[in-house]
Image (cartoon, rainbow, N blue to C red):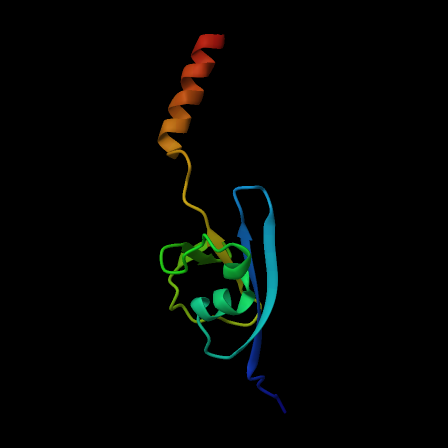
Length: 101
């Protein structure tokens, strides 16, 4: 006989620009969304500058919305905005290599 648990465990992580990494395990009821996990984790009180509505989020490195339903064992990631455009950074590295050669 298989017992279905009504609770799920998820991990919420955020890497702050200061280099600190926030990690919290959260127990939620089945059918909870990413927004519930973020709010329950306490990350918003540790980093008050985070705005739940405007932050990009994902599960295991794949972009998701705040309304995405979670499964047991998911890792919710709260992303920071990019500080440098990736194309610009590649161009700068290419120019630096040409100068050294």
